[in-house]
Length: 114
Image (cartoon, rainbow, N blue to C red; front, side, top):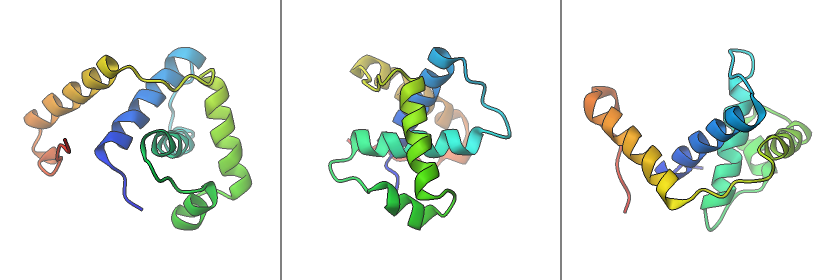
């Protein structure tokens, strides 16, 4: 199981949407389930072939299937079931990340798939 650059960007957009719509604060005690749910949803949103929740449970081993299902449904509800991302918004996040990577040597392996 590998994450594409697009899934990572979408996960970031979904987390920002969660923060703005539901006033969720990302803290040391909740960042992990928030990121997990965002990646799960972003992969389902973007990929032509996506894994079932049980596949994430088996691969990552962070949460049970019941907890994964609950995280996914709660995240969706808090985002008001609106995961559509306009092209302009995706491009804005993509460009911001790319410009940060150009400044940072830590992102030297970031590749752009066209």
